[in-house]
Amino acid sequence: MLILIDFFGTLADYELGIIQELKKRGQSEKIIPQNRRNTFYIKEQYPLEMRDLIDEIGNTPGFFRALDPVPGAIEGFKALSAQGHQLFICSSPFFNHENCVPETYQWIAKNLGTEWVEKIIITRDKTLVRGDLLIDDRPEVKGVVVPSWERILFDQPYNQEVKNLKRMTWANWQDIINN
Image (tube, rainbow, N blue to C red; front, side):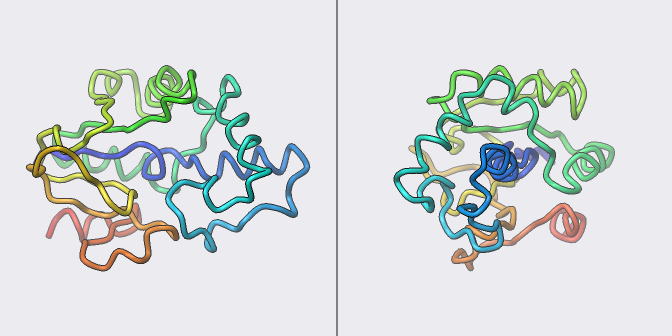
């Protein structure tokens, strides 16, 4: 099976990275706990006066490269590959952050192995990419064509309003993918 796996929020924990940096910058009392988040774009849930700080964090060299993996992501990803599935990392990066794309490549090489760098697809429109499955945390994936893939929603607090898709975590991926 050809499986496309989103990067941010599915493999790399972007939100945790922002929270850790906010804490380092003395903003602990203003942090919205991850389980209370209800918007896909983190800065949309924060007050206007914090949005520039969140952008500044994303523009800090090394931020994306240092993101922690989503719990279970590395093991789950490698197990999916070991089952013989063709995997590609399909990401819509933050283009307003100049380090995002190169550091995404660096993160993947460091955490998954250099052989996976050749299997990165960077696109703003995932509907243009062929596959059997797309695993993504975005509540809605839109594009210019009807996609070839079935969408599996990677479960996150900010996508709970979506009810019509299969939900996956790295704890239950075998039940979802193998059925």
